[in-house]
Image (cartoon, rainbow, N blue to C red):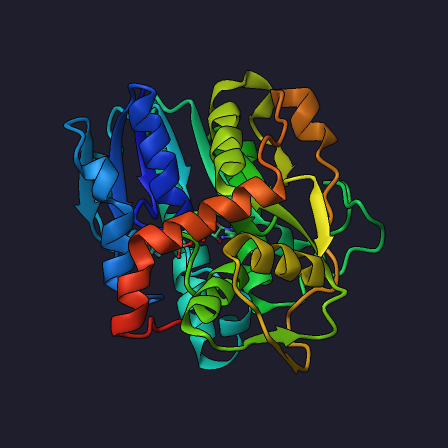
Length: 326
Ligand SMILES: NC(=O)c1ccc[n+]([C@@H]2O[C@H](COP(=O)([O-])OP(=O)(O)OC[C@H]3O[C@@H](n4cnc5c(N)ncnc54)[C@H](O)[C@@H]3O)[C@@H](O)[C@H]2O)c1
Protein backbone atom coordinates (compact mmCIF):
# COMPACT_ATOMS: atom_id res chain seq x y z
CA UNK A 1 0.00 0.00 0.00
CA UNK A 2 1.26 3.50 -0.81
CA UNK A 3 0.42 5.80 2.09
CA UNK A 4 0.73 9.47 2.89
CA UNK A 5 0.93 10.46 6.56
CA UNK A 6 0.47 14.17 7.23
CA UNK A 7 1.92 15.34 10.55
CA UNK A 8 4.44 12.50 10.29
CA UNK A 9 6.97 14.14 12.64
CA UNK A 10 4.43 14.56 15.41
CA UNK A 11 3.69 12.33 18.38
CA UNK A 12 1.04 10.09 16.82
CA UNK A 13 1.97 10.48 13.14
CA UNK A 14 5.51 9.22 13.76
CA UNK A 15 4.23 6.06 15.49
CA UNK A 16 1.84 5.46 12.62
CA UNK A 17 4.71 5.78 10.10
CA UNK A 18 6.84 3.29 12.05
CA UNK A 19 4.03 0.75 12.11
CA UNK A 20 3.16 1.15 8.41
CA UNK A 21 6.81 0.68 7.48
CA UNK A 22 7.13 -2.44 9.65
CA UNK A 23 4.02 -3.79 7.92
CA UNK A 24 5.75 -3.37 4.55
CA UNK A 25 3.96 -0.30 3.21
CA UNK A 26 5.53 2.60 1.35
CA UNK A 27 5.15 5.84 3.29
CA UNK A 28 5.47 9.44 2.26
CA UNK A 29 5.49 11.60 5.37
CA UNK A 30 4.53 15.27 5.16
CA UNK A 31 5.32 17.71 7.94
CA UNK A 32 5.89 21.44 8.18
CA UNK A 33 7.80 21.22 11.48
CA UNK A 34 5.60 23.99 12.80
CA UNK A 35 6.74 25.88 15.88
CA UNK A 36 4.12 24.18 18.09
CA UNK A 37 7.06 22.64 19.97
CA UNK A 38 10.79 22.28 19.48
CA UNK A 39 12.03 20.80 16.24
CA UNK A 40 14.56 18.52 17.95
CA UNK A 41 11.71 16.47 19.42
CA UNK A 42 10.05 16.09 16.03
CA UNK A 43 13.35 15.13 14.42
CA UNK A 44 13.84 12.52 17.12
CA UNK A 45 10.36 11.12 16.46
CA UNK A 46 11.37 10.45 12.86
CA UNK A 47 14.68 8.69 13.48
CA UNK A 48 13.26 5.18 13.08
CA UNK A 49 11.21 5.92 9.97
CA UNK A 50 14.12 7.64 8.25
CA UNK A 51 16.20 4.46 8.43
CA UNK A 52 13.77 2.77 6.00
CA UNK A 53 14.27 3.07 2.24
CA UNK A 54 10.48 2.87 1.86
CA UNK A 55 10.06 6.17 3.72
CA UNK A 56 10.33 9.61 2.17
CA UNK A 57 9.92 12.87 4.00
CA UNK A 58 8.38 15.90 2.35
CA UNK A 59 9.05 18.92 4.51
CA UNK A 60 6.37 21.44 3.74
CA UNK A 61 3.09 23.01 4.71
CA UNK A 62 -0.19 21.52 3.46
CA UNK A 63 -1.25 25.10 2.84
CA UNK A 64 1.52 25.64 0.30
CA UNK A 65 2.53 22.29 -1.20
CA UNK A 66 1.48 21.19 -4.67
CA UNK A 67 -0.81 18.48 -3.28
CA UNK A 68 -2.33 16.95 -6.40
CA UNK A 69 0.98 15.71 -7.76
CA UNK A 70 2.16 14.74 -4.29
CA UNK A 71 -0.87 12.48 -3.83
CA UNK A 72 -0.57 10.89 -7.24
CA UNK A 73 -1.10 7.11 -7.06
CA UNK A 74 -1.63 7.06 -3.30
CA UNK A 75 -3.89 4.38 -1.74
CA UNK A 76 -4.45 5.81 1.73
CA UNK A 77 -3.98 9.25 3.28
CA UNK A 78 -3.72 9.43 7.07
CA UNK A 79 -4.35 13.07 7.91
CA UNK A 80 -2.91 13.91 11.31
CA UNK A 81 -1.30 17.29 10.67
CA UNK A 82 -2.85 19.91 12.91
CA UNK A 83 -2.24 22.52 15.52
CA UNK A 84 -3.13 20.42 18.57
CA UNK A 85 -4.04 21.47 22.10
CA UNK A 86 -7.04 23.02 23.78
CA UNK A 87 -5.53 25.68 26.02
CA UNK A 88 -3.46 27.45 23.38
CA UNK A 89 -6.38 27.86 21.01
CA UNK A 90 -7.80 31.04 22.54
CA UNK A 91 -6.87 34.57 21.57
CA UNK A 92 -4.71 35.53 18.63
CA UNK A 93 -3.35 31.98 18.19
CA UNK A 94 -6.76 30.94 16.89
CA UNK A 95 -5.73 32.08 13.43
CA UNK A 96 -3.03 29.43 13.38
CA UNK A 97 -5.59 26.81 14.51
CA UNK A 98 -7.95 27.71 11.68
CA UNK A 99 -5.11 27.60 9.14
CA UNK A 100 -3.58 24.29 10.19
CA UNK A 101 -6.80 22.50 11.17
CA UNK A 102 -9.52 23.79 8.85
CA UNK A 103 -7.92 25.37 5.78
CA UNK A 104 -5.19 22.73 5.45
CA UNK A 105 -7.81 19.95 5.68
CA UNK A 106 -9.99 21.57 3.04
CA UNK A 107 -7.00 21.95 0.72
CA UNK A 108 -6.08 18.30 1.20
CA UNK A 109 -9.66 17.18 0.53
CA UNK A 110 -9.77 19.24 -2.69
CA UNK A 111 -6.60 17.53 -3.88
CA UNK A 112 -8.07 14.12 -2.99
CA UNK A 113 -10.99 14.67 -5.38
CA UNK A 114 -8.64 14.05 -8.29
CA UNK A 115 -7.19 10.81 -6.87
CA UNK A 116 -8.97 7.90 -8.52
CA UNK A 117 -6.87 5.30 -6.71
CA UNK A 118 -7.55 6.64 -3.22
CA UNK A 119 -9.20 4.03 -0.97
CA UNK A 120 -9.37 6.04 2.22
CA UNK A 121 -8.58 9.33 3.91
CA UNK A 122 -8.42 8.68 7.66
CA UNK A 123 -8.83 11.92 9.57
CA UNK A 124 -7.59 12.47 13.13
CA UNK A 125 -10.54 14.04 14.95
CA UNK A 126 -10.84 14.52 18.67
CA UNK A 127 -13.02 13.90 21.72
CA UNK A 128 -12.90 17.67 22.19
CA UNK A 129 -15.67 18.00 19.59
CA UNK A 130 -18.12 16.73 22.26
CA UNK A 131 -17.43 19.34 24.95
CA UNK A 132 -19.06 18.35 28.25
CA UNK A 133 -21.13 15.42 27.02
CA UNK A 134 -24.57 15.14 28.62
CA UNK A 135 -24.42 11.36 28.98
CA UNK A 136 -21.43 9.12 29.51
CA UNK A 137 -20.10 7.03 27.94
CA UNK A 138 -20.58 9.32 24.97
CA UNK A 139 -21.54 7.75 21.66
CA UNK A 140 -21.02 9.14 18.18
CA UNK A 141 -24.74 9.97 18.07
CA UNK A 142 -24.34 12.72 20.71
CA UNK A 143 -24.73 16.29 19.49
CA UNK A 144 -21.23 17.82 19.30
CA UNK A 145 -20.89 20.90 21.52
CA UNK A 146 -17.19 21.78 21.70
CA UNK A 147 -16.21 24.19 24.48
CA UNK A 148 -12.82 25.20 23.08
CA UNK A 149 -11.80 26.93 19.84
CA UNK A 150 -9.57 23.90 19.14
CA UNK A 151 -12.62 21.61 19.40
CA UNK A 152 -14.49 23.88 16.99
CA UNK A 153 -11.71 23.59 14.40
CA UNK A 154 -11.57 19.80 14.70
CA UNK A 155 -15.34 19.58 14.31
CA UNK A 156 -15.20 21.84 11.25
CA UNK A 157 -12.52 19.66 9.68
CA UNK A 158 -14.50 16.52 10.46
CA UNK A 159 -17.56 18.05 8.80
CA UNK A 160 -15.48 18.94 5.76
CA UNK A 161 -14.50 15.27 5.48
CA UNK A 162 -18.18 14.31 5.52
CA UNK A 163 -19.07 16.96 2.94
CA UNK A 164 -16.33 15.85 0.53
CA UNK A 165 -17.52 12.25 0.94
CA UNK A 166 -21.18 13.00 0.33
CA UNK A 167 -20.62 15.39 -2.59
CA UNK A 168 -17.53 14.05 -4.33
CA UNK A 169 -17.14 10.53 -2.99
CA UNK A 170 -13.78 11.20 -1.30
CA UNK A 171 -13.66 8.09 0.93
CA UNK A 172 -13.14 9.74 4.30
CA UNK A 173 -13.46 8.38 7.82
CA UNK A 174 -12.97 10.38 11.02
CA UNK A 175 -11.56 8.88 14.21
CA UNK A 176 -12.30 10.80 17.40
CA UNK A 177 -9.26 10.17 19.57
CA UNK A 178 -9.59 10.37 23.34
CA UNK A 179 -6.52 11.74 25.24
CA UNK A 180 -3.57 9.93 23.70
CA UNK A 181 -0.43 9.10 25.67
CA UNK A 182 2.71 6.98 25.43
CA UNK A 183 6.28 7.42 24.15
CA UNK A 184 6.86 10.69 22.22
CA UNK A 185 3.84 12.43 23.77
CA UNK A 186 3.72 16.16 23.01
CA UNK A 187 5.49 18.32 25.62
CA UNK A 188 2.35 20.34 26.37
CA UNK A 189 0.37 17.23 27.37
CA UNK A 190 -0.22 16.29 31.01
CA UNK A 191 1.75 13.04 31.38
CA UNK A 192 4.75 14.45 29.55
CA UNK A 193 4.72 17.55 31.77
CA UNK A 194 4.27 15.42 34.91
CA UNK A 195 7.13 13.06 34.06
CA UNK A 196 9.41 15.97 33.19
CA UNK A 197 8.59 17.64 36.53
CA UNK A 198 9.12 14.40 38.45
CA UNK A 199 12.63 13.97 37.03
CA UNK A 200 13.46 17.64 37.60
CA UNK A 201 12.31 17.38 41.24
CA UNK A 202 9.64 20.00 40.64
CA UNK A 203 6.00 20.08 41.64
CA UNK A 204 3.30 19.62 39.04
CA UNK A 205 0.37 21.87 38.35
CA UNK A 206 -2.95 20.13 38.66
CA UNK A 207 -5.91 22.08 37.38
CA UNK A 208 -9.18 21.67 39.30
CA UNK A 209 -9.51 19.08 42.08
CA UNK A 210 -8.04 16.02 40.38
CA UNK A 211 -11.42 14.28 40.32
CA UNK A 212 -11.92 15.04 36.63
CA UNK A 213 -11.75 11.88 34.54
CA UNK A 214 -10.16 10.97 31.22
CA UNK A 215 -10.49 7.98 28.95
CA UNK A 216 -6.76 7.66 28.27
CA UNK A 217 -5.74 5.92 25.05
CA UNK A 218 -2.32 4.52 24.37
CA UNK A 219 -0.81 5.55 21.06
CA UNK A 220 -0.45 1.89 19.94
CA UNK A 221 -4.23 1.54 20.12
CA UNK A 222 -4.67 4.73 18.09
CA UNK A 223 -2.31 3.37 15.43
CA UNK A 224 -4.24 0.10 15.34
CA UNK A 225 -7.53 1.97 14.86
CA UNK A 226 -6.02 3.93 11.95
CA UNK A 227 -4.99 0.73 10.20
CA UNK A 228 -8.41 -0.85 10.72
CA UNK A 229 -10.20 2.27 9.49
CA UNK A 230 -8.10 2.20 6.33
CA UNK A 231 -8.73 -1.49 5.64
CA UNK A 232 -12.38 -2.05 6.46
CA UNK A 233 -14.93 -1.14 3.79
CA UNK A 234 -17.65 -0.38 6.38
CA UNK A 235 -15.84 2.67 7.69
CA UNK A 236 -16.22 4.98 4.69
CA UNK A 237 -18.19 8.14 5.41
CA UNK A 238 -18.41 7.43 9.15
CA UNK A 239 -17.05 8.74 12.45
CA UNK A 240 -15.74 6.58 15.29
CA UNK A 241 -14.75 7.07 18.89
CA UNK A 242 -11.32 5.60 19.55
CA UNK A 243 -10.52 5.33 23.24
CA UNK A 244 -8.63 3.22 25.73
CA UNK A 245 -11.45 1.96 27.92
CA UNK A 246 -9.45 3.06 30.96
CA UNK A 247 -11.40 6.00 32.36
CA UNK A 248 -9.72 7.16 35.55
CA UNK A 249 -9.47 10.30 37.64
CA UNK A 250 -6.44 12.50 37.06
CA UNK A 251 -5.55 11.96 40.73
CA UNK A 252 -5.40 8.22 40.17
CA UNK A 253 -3.27 8.60 37.05
CA UNK A 254 -0.82 10.83 38.98
CA UNK A 255 -0.58 8.24 41.76
CA UNK A 256 0.19 5.51 39.23
CA UNK A 257 2.77 7.72 37.54
CA UNK A 258 4.49 8.40 40.88
CA UNK A 259 4.55 4.66 41.62
CA UNK A 260 5.84 3.67 38.17
CA UNK A 261 8.53 6.35 37.97
CA UNK A 262 9.35 5.85 41.64
CA UNK A 263 9.43 9.62 42.08
CA UNK A 264 7.33 11.83 44.31
CA UNK A 265 4.92 14.07 42.40
CA UNK A 266 4.08 17.01 44.67
CA UNK A 267 0.98 18.74 43.38
CA UNK A 268 0.28 22.46 43.14
CA UNK A 269 -3.40 23.18 42.60
CA UNK A 270 -4.63 25.72 40.07
CA UNK A 271 -8.02 26.81 38.82
CA UNK A 272 -9.66 24.97 35.95
CA UNK A 273 -8.68 26.22 32.51
CA UNK A 274 -11.15 27.55 29.94
CA UNK A 275 -11.87 24.87 27.34
CA UNK A 276 -11.01 21.90 29.56
CA UNK A 277 -13.88 19.42 29.86
CA UNK A 278 -14.67 17.80 33.19
CA UNK A 279 -15.02 14.18 32.08
CA UNK A 280 -14.36 12.12 28.99
CA UNK A 281 -15.50 8.56 28.53
CA UNK A 282 -16.19 6.96 25.17
CA UNK A 283 -18.64 4.37 23.99
CA UNK A 284 -16.41 2.43 21.58
CA UNK A 285 -18.96 -0.17 20.52
CA UNK A 286 -19.30 1.21 16.98
CA UNK A 287 -15.55 0.90 16.35
CA UNK A 288 -15.71 -2.60 17.83
CA UNK A 289 -18.58 -3.70 15.62
CA UNK A 290 -17.52 -2.13 12.32
CA UNK A 291 -13.78 -2.58 12.43
CA UNK A 292 -13.01 -4.96 15.26
CA UNK A 293 -11.26 -2.28 17.31
CA UNK A 294 -10.34 -3.34 20.87
CA UNK A 295 -7.96 -1.32 23.04
CA UNK A 296 -5.06 -3.51 24.10
CA UNK A 297 -2.83 -1.36 26.32
CA UNK A 298 -3.80 -0.81 29.97
CA UNK A 299 -2.88 2.37 31.83
CA UNK A 300 0.03 0.93 33.85
CA UNK A 301 1.65 -0.60 30.77
CA UNK A 302 1.15 2.60 28.80
CA UNK A 303 2.57 4.81 31.54
CA UNK A 304 5.62 2.54 31.84
CA UNK A 305 6.16 2.94 28.10
CA UNK A 306 6.09 6.73 28.38
CA UNK A 307 8.35 6.82 31.46
CA UNK A 308 10.90 4.50 29.80
CA UNK A 309 10.91 6.62 26.66
CA UNK A 310 11.49 9.73 28.75
CA UNK A 311 14.41 8.08 30.55
CA UNK A 312 15.98 6.84 27.32
CA UNK A 313 15.59 9.89 25.10
CA UNK A 314 14.52 12.94 27.05
CA UNK A 315 16.42 13.03 30.30
CA UNK A 316 19.55 14.67 28.84
CA UNK A 317 17.46 17.14 26.83
CA UNK A 318 15.34 18.05 29.85
CA UNK A 319 18.42 18.82 31.92
CA UNK A 320 20.14 20.91 29.26
CA UNK A 321 17.25 23.13 28.24
CA UNK A 322 13.52 23.40 28.88
CA UNK A 323 11.24 22.52 26.00
CA UNK A 324 8.93 25.25 24.97
CA UNK A 325 5.32 24.24 25.16
CA UNK A 326 2.65 26.54 23.94
N1 LIG B 1 -2.54 13.80 21.18
C1 LIG B 1 -3.82 13.67 21.49
O1 LIG B 1 -4.20 13.33 22.63
C2 LIG B 1 -4.88 13.92 20.44
C3 LIG B 1 -6.24 13.76 20.80
C4 LIG B 1 -7.21 13.98 19.84
C5 LIG B 1 -6.86 14.29 18.54
N2 LIG B 1 -5.54 14.45 18.22
C6 LIG B 1 -5.20 14.79 16.84
O2 LIG B 1 -4.21 13.88 16.38
C7 LIG B 1 -3.35 14.54 15.46
C8 LIG B 1 -1.90 14.36 15.88
O3 LIG B 1 -1.73 14.92 17.18
P1 LIG B 1 -0.32 14.89 17.93
O4 LIG B 1 -0.60 14.89 19.37
O5 LIG B 1 0.54 13.84 17.31
O6 LIG B 1 0.22 16.36 17.52
P2 LIG B 1 1.67 16.85 17.10
O7 LIG B 1 1.65 18.33 17.27
O8 LIG B 1 2.72 16.08 17.80
O9 LIG B 1 1.75 16.50 15.55
C9 LIG B 1 1.15 17.30 14.54
C10 LIG B 1 2.18 17.52 13.45
O10 LIG B 1 1.54 18.18 12.36
C11 LIG B 1 2.48 19.10 11.79
N3 LIG B 1 1.69 20.12 11.07
C12 LIG B 1 0.81 21.00 11.62
N4 LIG B 1 0.26 21.76 10.67
C13 LIG B 1 0.79 21.36 9.48
C14 LIG B 1 0.59 21.76 8.13
N5 LIG B 1 -0.23 22.76 7.80
N6 LIG B 1 1.29 21.11 7.15
C15 LIG B 1 2.15 20.10 7.47
N7 LIG B 1 2.36 19.69 8.74
C16 LIG B 1 1.70 20.30 9.74
C17 LIG B 1 3.26 19.63 12.97
O11 LIG B 1 4.54 20.12 12.59
C18 LIG B 1 3.35 18.39 13.87
O12 LIG B 1 4.59 17.69 13.67
C19 LIG B 1 -3.80 16.00 15.40
O13 LIG B 1 -4.67 16.14 14.29
C20 LIG B 1 -4.59 16.18 16.69
O14 LIG B 1 -5.57 17.18 16.57
C21 LIG B 1 -4.54 14.27 19.14
